[in-house]
Every structure is written in C-alpha cells, then in structure tokens.
Image (tube, rainbow, N blue to C red; front, side, top):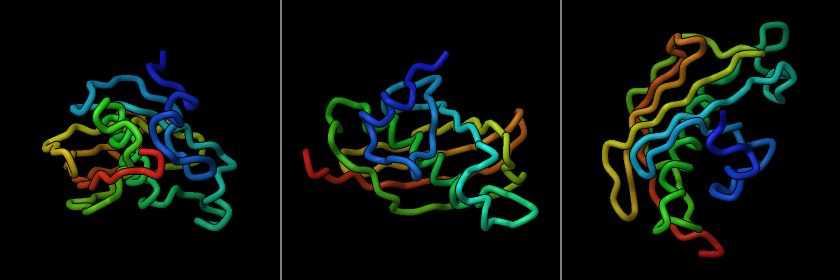
Length: 147
C-alpha cells in the first residue's frame, strides 16, 4: 500500500507529466530515507526514440527518478515546504541492468548529509531485486516562487 500517491507527491515536488517520474512512495523517514516506485509503461514517451525496435529507459531518467524520490523525502520536511531541489552533483553513477517497458523500478534514497541548503544521498534503483542503477546524488535547496 502506498504511503503517498501521485497526487500527494505533486503537492510536495513541482514536477508534472510528462516529467513526474515517480508514481508512489511506499516508505519514508523525513529527511533520512525514502522508498518510491515507478511503473514503466510500455508506451512511455522516451521509448519512441530510445531505441526504436529495442526500447530501453535512458539511464539519466533512472537517475532523475532517484532524484525525485530524494526530493520528496527532503521537501516533505516542514522547514523545506515550498523549496526546490536542484541537482548539484552526481557521483559514482553505475548502470547494471536496463530498465525495460513493463518494469517496476524500486527507488531507494538514503541521506548521508543534510544541511539547510544542500544534501547528499546514496541512491539505488532495482527491478525485481536486481540492481539497475546506483549513484551518490548531491542537491541544492532554494526557495520556490511561492516560498
């Protein structure tokens, strides 16, 4: 059962279709850890060109899925309400398995450091328990238009 559904996620992060890349949050410890999921629809827009006849989710989109999950974890904290999270750095990114049409991606981010204006987390994406991608992501927080 989802802790947060897509509509609730949209109340926390500003991403919208077609670039909202998480469907639900299953577990969350505010500012510490999050587990989210993305269902990869067979008709996802990126498959048309990546790659015709051999559809594969681009690795950068898998990293973006992880970043959005991490953003939900950090921006759910009351002191961060209305802020935006921007990529500051991606380290140690590794891709081990392609993410294919019909896959369900489990996205887990654990915060290593969290300050008032930036943070770093370890992030893993798995499909059926198999590692698809991992990275260390660093983000900067800034005020949103409504903050």
